[in-house]
Image (cartoon, rainbow over all chains, first blue to last red):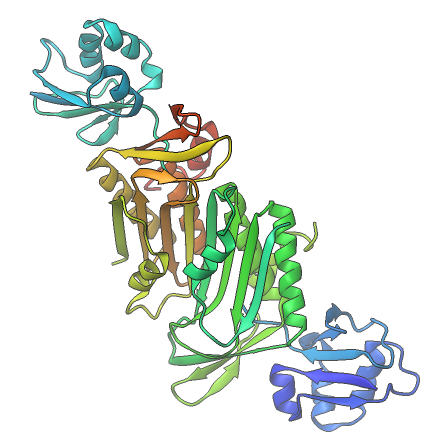
Length: 84
Length: 84
Length: 154
Length: 154
């Protein structure tokens, strides 16, 4: 199972901080996962329609949407960071 | 009377932290005072023979050897500062 | 090995205590630079709510701190970032850098703050007296500030 | 008016207390940068003896602090310089700068240290374990560091 995490306004809008999910059929990279999430419609479609507003981490390292993913990965979606 | 102050190694070598002195005859600037001090010979002559090693303040502000001096001024001689 | 301390916590920090820990047993330190970020008031702001990504946050903070130690030859550094609700006037973040010479400590502090702001997964939500709240937008100048350092491990 | 605190003292300072005093009642501060200079060991050094020119020292420190407040738009700053005998590991000087934004506080701290080192009348004598002692020579790089800021009141 993939472990998906959502932070900040993504979590607020999706109403959840994360979920577990089997690796979608034929998914090899973050972009494939995003495509699967968009297909749910509603807030998922709205949020993932604008990938330029979203940052991704795979297994707790920053990644691009081209980054490969595999079963058991932890994949986090969040806005650009604003700490410090 | 002029109030003359010596700091750091100037004080160590001269064996005094200061002195009061009438404005030397015809003295108008720091250089004139230095000339009068050099004329004492000994450590005064040795120290003031190398003005490039010495900094001057007139009335607690940095000054050049061309700065004018007058009776009742406070004139300090010291090496370049090394605080901080 | 440089002495590196990383913490994410809700509690307030004590910069004097952290400085003493950083310096303990070190006679080769000539200066400690520090930066404390504070919740700045204005515009009706009451508090910030700081959220983070546990695990990734600490590993990014450690990477940034270790990179600063290597790049600037630090004796050690400490980074503490608070999370949770922080009222106006409260400290958010502390960076301490100790080195033999002053400029290394000061530059390392700037470097670490630039990287923390853009690469450690924290998010701020602003709470206003009106009851309104909003996530803070990232600032382009923070990215530009980070960019001047090249990559983290240059 | 910026809040400016200047002190020359033999006693140790408490940076956390000084920071609290600097910030008290100010909600417009986003960051405090600090630098603490420390007596660095090595080469058999045991202690420094710090001498100063009473009166001129305080007036130069005040000019430097006020210049920093104006140039960098500080909310306030604190400069404390110790005198007398300071053993290895002891703090010598504290500069604190508070401002709305981080870079102003950090640059002001560097500015004040560069000016203090070259323009405030303090002199250091080094005491070694051998019993030998010697006045510290000024460093050309300190003058160069100051020069990048132009004149004090630019």
